[in-house]
Amino acid sequence: MTALKGRKQTPEHIAKRVASRAFKPWPQRDPMERFWEKVGDHTDPAACWEWKASGDKHGYGAFYLDGALTKAPRAAWRLLVGQIPEGMWVCHRCDNPPCVNPAHLFLGSRADNLSDMRRKSRGKVPGAGWSGALGENHRAAKLTWALVAEARERFSRGEILSALARDYGVTPPTMWAVVHRKTWKVA
Ligand SMILES: [Zn+2]
Image (cartoon, rainbow, N blue to C red; front, top):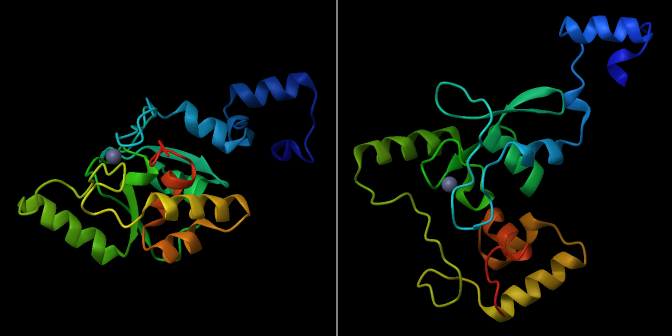
């Protein structure tokens, strides 16, 4: 209850502050719990997981994280994958702004983000790059069942996603989906 530090805390004062909207108890709840409440159906690892709470005019959801309002896809990356290096953008492979599925997100520079948007708006690139790959038969698969088992073992021993992703030549969201058994499910 840091918001109330140094202030009078009688129930009457609290009621007054809640009513005046100066007191916002919701950001103090567990961010992960609040996050999932705002995400629609996320049972299919290959599908878009759409933000169902409020968003801006471009369709991006907004989420209160670490004391600041954050775009939902950035919040998803920080909660589920890891830190976002300074100056990097969280971009969509799926071209769907409300989507927060980590497997559909990637880190890019501002230039990547803009050239990506330009390319897509010209319509020269079919699809948005999401292959929906679920196993090693997919032509673009870089992983094999042996590597998947090894990566999961290393993850369970505490190795971090970004390092594993680099070692196995995949993106962090792809590795996230692998170690959380969202992809490569049937061994
Ligand atoms: Zn998506």
